[in-house]
Length: 125
Image (tube, rainbow, N blue to C red):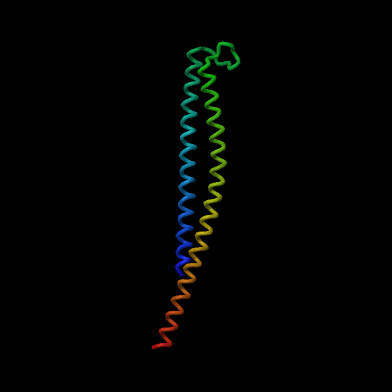
């Protein structure tokens, strides 16, 4: 059956797409982590240079405040991406299950066709 083959190809494409999305999310999470670590180093260097670590101090460096805010925003985005990753993992598992079902249907149909062809040739011969 041609439609079963197309179904299997479609499901395989969907699984590959989900895997690609998952890999992309992993890369983004890692990149955000790297950027947040760099910002953390910049904040500590700026605090050390100014000699002030109290955020509420009137002379606390403006750059350090801005870098802290960017770092916090990156951490929040990273948490959001982690939630998206969990949803993507679930979607991948579902897609893999649908692919397995479609492959089993195709194998079953292939076996039944083989039996029909073998039965016909046995009746003819």
